[in-house]
Length: 475
Image 1 (tube, rainbow, N blue to C red):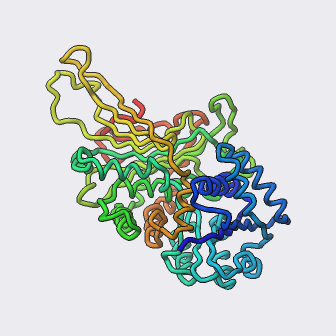
Image 2: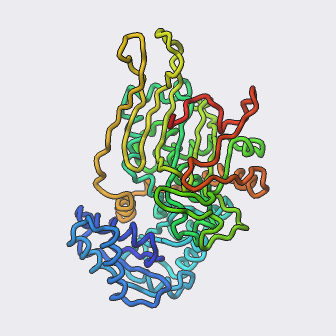
Image 3: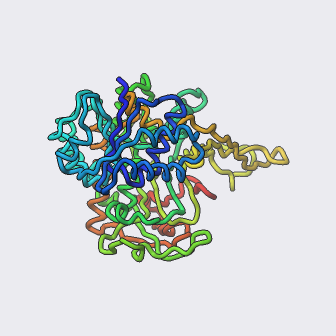
């Protein structure tokens, strides 16, 4: 059943203006929604419908100027507004009231999810309604489990969409396509041939005015616990029977369950946290994180997080998975990099400077490339060659694809309840050890490559963060 009414709690926020409104205009331009569609924004601002439509117009002009003007006008005309306290059952009930089912989007801070879901329960959603929640899903394992219980009392699991826009990105989906549709890759997609897989989201952007959210979350919860673990699932999962919701999500949960639990010793040697100090990024001066407006230095929030995981499975035992994300760095690097092992023997008499193959899935911008070794100007010499392909522009933006699935009722790309809990199980030992200061808070200058490499003790193999078993990605 297709739903034709969307209620966004947090309807005046950055997520709505920057992503949801342009996504709706893209859906209209592609013919997926029409004039029967209705949008209700709900928030605390004392606005009326006219004021909200003017705001939506300005947001679409800013973030969706490349979309057809008639589609932008259609979305604006479909919009209405209700002033609402998202924790008040009466306000929530008035926003969702009606006979037809509604898709309720919680574009809210995660701390408000339990109270809003409780209010929705008391307000009584129309039958057939669906609920959409942004990441992070809960603030820890116990919080995720409690939120799952609240949601189970509200709607069936198939009507819960725990969305992660990374899963709708074209290149992310191409990770599966490249693996499963190419015979040359699938036979070697295992630890026999792959030494390490890096999943990286490094960005030059610093805090950019997001202290109200970011300082309560940090890099580990903001990026690693959800986005990067989702990428891990797609990279490491066993081939599903189909791409239907059950088969795909079952295999993703298998990956998370196979992650070897981290002990305190593991956390100390396989994770890092840091935050940026003042520096120069490009043409701008960046203040130290602790000096940014709205930051409370006592929280010791990290802007850089890195963890090395191992999977206890037939396919992956012996391969390292390095998940890393940082803000305020010297260059953007957003990719999945698959580092293959070296060949067993080179008959060229040139072992030095020969690098193993690396397959790279560029996430932003979207691309696919392979670092290869080929014969140089003389037959007995070798040289490096990079084969790169730019990806076609997606038919819909990531949020457009997610909203299409929500309105159409396809939860395949949403996160199931057990998957959300397993993701917290992976990172909870890290959070616990960091809270007890078992891992130091390092610093790196804004505009740099991040915290400097650790110095390891010769002969020790317990520090997997900087063990030189594969060539550095940018060397």
